[in-house]
Amino acid sequence: MDISLIDILLAHLALFFASIIYTISGFGLGLISIPILINIFETKTVVILINFTTIYLALLIIRNTKEVIERKEITPVLIFGILGVPFGVLLIASIDVEPLKVSVLLAIIVISIIGFIQIGNGQPASKYFRYPASFITTILITTLGLGTPLLVIVLNKTGLKKNILRKYLAIFGLSVQLFALIGYVFASLISFELFVLLVSVFPTIFIGFKVGNKINLRLNNIIFERFIYMFILISSLIMLIDILYI
Image 1: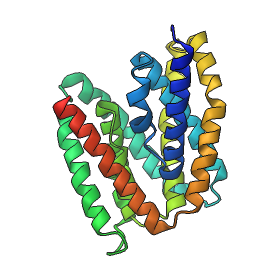
Image 2 (image 1 turned 180 degrees about the vertical axis):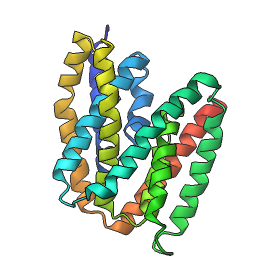
Image 3 (image 1 turned 180 degrees about the horizontal axis):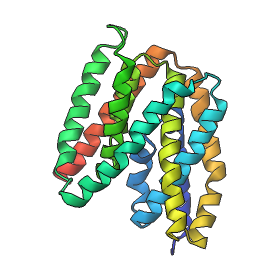
């Protein structure tokens, strides 16, 4: 892995801003950092770097969030999420999934607009919607590399407050990414140079977490919901434009 000092600084800058967004919202790490990282490192390195950063930030969020999530509440979400992995692998191995990205992004955009309009209005949806949402999210992540916004919207509509929502997403991300990291280790995908890079980003990620956490403390639930929906809408539109016109 032959990289320059400028490349390393750009990678740290990308992960710093991505860490702030992830700490505030509980997702979006790849949406912010991948456009920069993919121009510096090969794809496998970017995926592992995002994986590692997600695990570290998820642990920080879980450790620093005082709200308690009962095991019986989160366990079914994790089980349904893990069950989606083999279906996603089967799907990506059997069909051309690229055309599906446009349809999924359009659906997410429409749902986010409806959710934004309904902020503060209406009754929360049934919590049982979380289970199929986690299952579908894992399939979408496995096949298309996107899908977390769908889970975010569903969790938000089932009445979860902002810190509980962030903790939910952190536990979900940690569970999925830990399985992936174990696989990377057994597949000998982490070289010494990559290991050094992973260690070097620890302080950057931690500072990004601290900044994001201070911003999060200033957000009430209504402002948090607006931020979530606007971030989902803007990022999805950018991805859709990138697919269609670039």
